[in-house]
Amino acid sequence: MSFRVSRISLATFRNYRAFSCQGFGNLNIFVGPNATGKTNLLEAVELTTALSSFRNPQTTELIAWDELEAKISLEVEDGPRRNTITLQVSEGKKTFGLNGKKASRSDLAGMVPSVLFSPDDLRLVKDGSSLKRRALDAMGEQISGAYRAVRRDYEKIIRQKARLLKEGVDATYLSSVNDTVAMVGTQLELYRRQISLGISSLISDVYRDMMGKPERVEFVYLPSWESPESENGALGDDYLSREAILREFQEALVAMEAQELARGRCLVGPHLDVPRFLVEGRDASLFASQGQQRSVALSFKMSQLLYIQEKTGHKPILLLDDVMSELDEVRRSALMAYISSDTQTFITTTNLNYFTKDELAEAQVFALENMMNQEV
Image 1 (tube, rainbow, N blue to C red):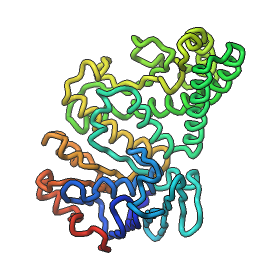
Image 2 (spheres, one colour):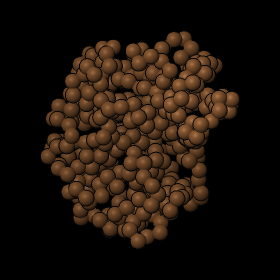
Image 3 (cartoon, one colour):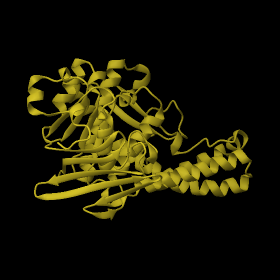
């Protein structure tokens, strides 16, 4: 089952005062110069499918200047079925809707999933762990309606613990706080490990199919309490055991308690876990070439498509935000060849020369500069 976007409507959203566009096919290309709102348009689709934005904006940033609210409306269809997903944004508040009725995030999670690939994602392999953790969380929140609640609960308790450590909490009270940290953090840790194993089971085949190279690629998730030299994430039989994770987490919190009190910082937990890409068993951030790193990042994004579809039963929409300008011809060709004919794809670009004549012939091309604040 796969919902497809049939219409996008925006009202006072970022630089769009009024905008509505329809007539989408499988491959849709929005072309225009910089500062015409190409990324804003894909962000609107992401906000009403993935239910979050890769920019992580404040609500006020989503609202056009001198306006009090913004609205996104996304019409989607699956054969005879029609649905309209809406998002209304006011200062400090987001309200989702489905077919004219208020809806919660859990109601909409995974209904119309999406995967966004931006130039920043090409740094996934090389850059630090936070970018990789955010990528896992973005996937998890589309797969499970409970994931976001668990992540937010964990972040809240970690902020509270950090504040207490800075204020000089005593060891007895810290121990009671750590009980909650371990309980909530264990569930987040388990979610992320499950996703990491799923991605790792796909990424080597995707890499080989896209790049035509037999190199073994893995995605591993290393808990913060493991040694940095451990490259396999301690993949034992109990890797997905909630009881084992809880026990290890509790032991690590006890072991680090004195250091946390002395340094006034949280030193263990999922917020410090280390996801890694490995190529032939070696850390890709250290040993892979820049070209290999970019190929691994591409493969990771395509693996996300497959994994989310496997878990939700819905084929995700693919959003490519100006990545063609960041890829060489070989990787552009590999990406376009890999995109499935039944994966609805939205691409933004400043230059149509990145596409072949055959690709343009199959695409719906929209000149965004001529469409601003009008219906198409």
